[in-house]
Image (cartoon, rainbow, N blue to C red):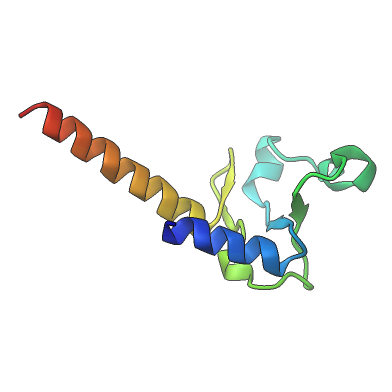
Amino acid sequence: MSIGTVLNNIAIKSNSNHMPIFPDVTYLTGFVRPEMFIETYNHGDFHVLGNHMTRLIPICDIFDNGISIYSIGDLFIFSFAFIIIYNSIKASNK
C-alpha cells in the first residue's frame, strides 16, 4: 500500500468516512459551487465541505489549483505514478 493511499484513508476514516475539502480558487473558476454541499444535492457524496470540526486538516483536500482540489496523499499517488511511467518509458527506449 502506498503512502498516499494510507494518508487518504487516515483522513477519510478520521472524518466519519468523508473526505473534507477546502475550496478557494475552484469557487472562482466555477468548478465547485456552494450548493454542491447541500445534503439534498450531493446524495451522500463522500466529499464534504471542511470546517472547524474537521480532523487532520493537513492531510485533507487542501491544495486547490482552480480545477481540482488535492490532498498530500493524492500528490504522493501522482508522484508514484509519474515515476513508474517515466521509468517504463525510459526502460522501453533502451
